[in-house]
Length: 429
Image (cartoon, rainbow, N blue to C red):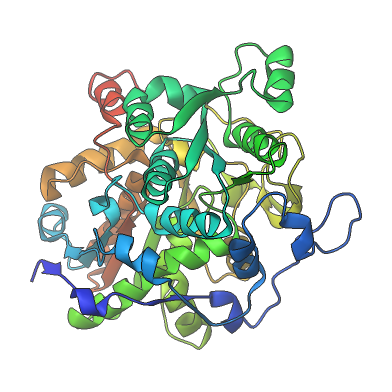
């Protein structure tokens, strides 16, 4: 079989919280003013109360609200597909599967948490939400979700992505979001950056600073985040829960699980149900793939750092390149983040997850091969996972090993065609 589908009745109705099953304590979030562990009350000016509870939760299972499930059913469960044509092109004995998150309304995995976050803000009576976005996948997802629940939405979009991906901006505006290129004159943080560097291309760290500042200045507003934090990864666990069931349908046990990482949400959600299996002794490789232009896991330090460039956020124990780091303007805008989710960072530190990094051109070569064999033009971010899957499949061919490789296709690249045009015309850096 090529496609493995779950029925509507098999849609998971609970999110899985990996933290409850880890044999190690997750380092606490630190308040930068007191240097003490953060308390729930410290986050109330920034996040909705329901999300704060999930951020600190150690419960193994969290019920998904019916209103969230109703929206999920627009596209979930998503298919698990076998990449038979890619296998044939590579002449590999490996069996390659991919979890296809590109079928969501916005074309990526991001609505899995956007819908949940919009719901909890609406439940609390919040009027407006603010956020940042890199490539625009998160921005379009939260615009979609905000529109579903009747919330106003302002998105600070990294300026280089704002310029590279104009139709992501258009998609957000279709769902009534206001989109502002970051750094901007709207906030003190943005003004300070522009004062020091008027031509700054922006970064996720800068955009986060602007969105947080905007939210805390308005009592009727709250901030939402598309990656990194525990509650975001919790929501994304629905991807891994479905994948686990679908691999059983395919009569497979995964030997290798692969995903791209920027802040870590799609990768974490994908591997969450399998991590305890690995800790308990099951032989599963877990590969986190990042760009060489922003090599957080492969070159960063595991330490406490701010999540934004202005130092407005709490301190997180994570792999980081430093909160002032501004990466090169690569087209995988969603992977241009200086830090990494604390849970993913801990798993790398404990050698549960293996990180690797690839250069942009190598990634696009893999993306084109995937498009030519499987018919889907992948997002530049997702193409990092494809590149790793191809490399491991070639290794399996050389070693004559019949293994099961499964990766997450976190989104399609239909709004990233400018990047493909540059690659095909030899204009990509």
